[in-house]
Length: 234
Image (cartoon, rainbow, N blue to C red; front, side, top):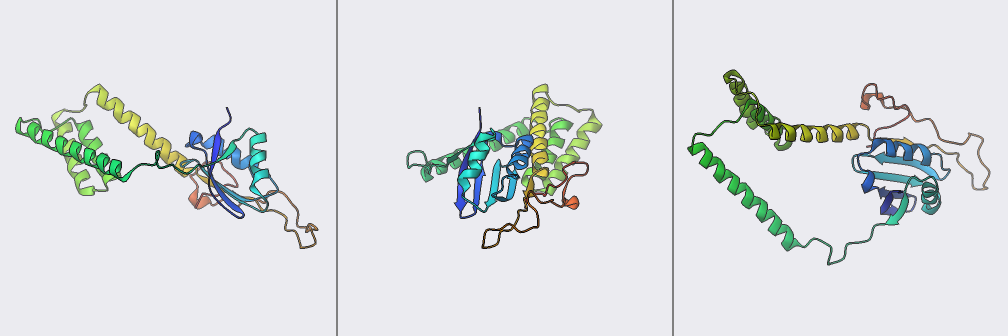
């Protein structure tokens, strides 16, 4: 089934589309860039797999470009319908959700105090090192990360290495997802398509036509990525 690209924003000569069903699928967006950059109306084409977005700069109406994308089986285009009052999230519901999360946080804090009072303070070394990673990566708190790292080393010295299998499996799933997101972010790309300028009389200049060569920004691409002519998205 052909994926759907929603037109999120459009100005004369510029449009931003989003393909939510293909988010994170780098090969799909590479194909979109490769095929649509050949269209004579495309001046610049930027794709970001991490967010599933495609940004087009074009010299003619957008419809022939989106029709070409549909003909090639890349995507079909629909306009993003504004949220109705019934479907839009209400401020009251957001406040209720935030209050619920705050209540869960308070409950977990209370349970931690109960466990500390019963002498169940430390987890395994794996759990402590995982908490250190989360404190640094998610919270941006190197002080908390250092404290958990010390606890992890302490547990290693005591021989308390591994937590339960369920925890280890969950850690593996989270790391796999984070690695996939980082890889998609690193391989986000933009291909500028240089086109022949046309004078006012409509005669093509003799500078040639077709997709111009994109100079690779080697300092911003991952080593050995093999994507020649791809510019990282700004």
